[in-house]
Length: 96
Image (cartoon, rainbow, N blue to C red):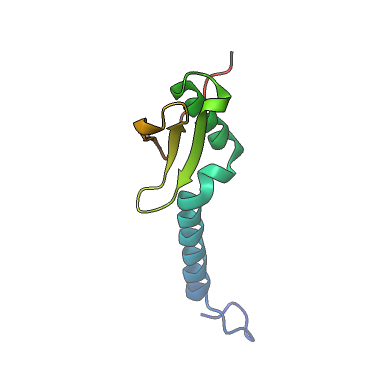
């Protein structure tokens, strides 16, 4: 059924396009959302800082994209220890 008499767009095509756009948006957020979302990035920074002893100069935080996207925290004072996988979601600290 056409939306208007002159239109070739059907409601099925519109629903299909909306579903495809929703899936693409969800996939893009899954892969790239946490580093561009201020609250999630701030939580990862705070969590990595806590893991490395509370000194902001001693850590390196990376967002790793792949089959399992996650935050990787590296302690610069002990590079032999390797990166710590902090997961996709890092819980923010409660407000004091």
